[in-house]
Length: 160
Figure 1 (cartoon, rainbow, N blue to C red):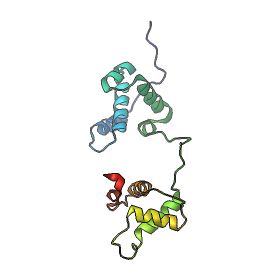
Figure 2: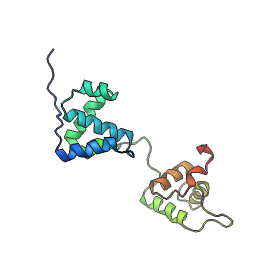
Figure 3: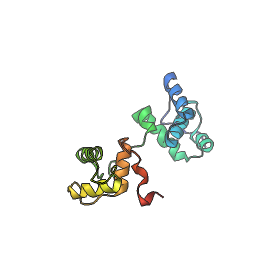
Figure 4: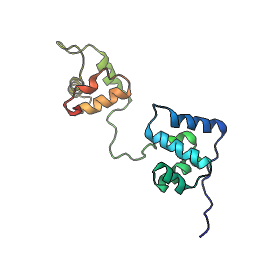
């Protein structure tokens, strides 16, 4: 059986190669991004999908997908997670409701409280009819995403 010619060939520029090398050695980078950068570097060096899969401990299909994404969508898009076109669940927070949460979180806490907790924020958003119901975990994730967590991430019983 002959060797199949690759349909999606990764040819990186010198700057791209160096950026990927830095990604693979940087301390604070997601494992997924590090793995994809390593796949692209090995693909650029001419390794086969099977060799890359064996060396990195991933499936051949993963290597093929990353290689294809790089060729079709570009280097940056091949490193990041693909945005779901049809998510299984709609996002609770949109721009307006997120702004309302942040406005509330930055306001004075209720009487007798030193600061807002995720539970107090969730209860207040339901009381204000922003949501019919909202979990404290959703509040925590949203605040963390906006870098406004202020230590609230540990005030729920589910975080033990």
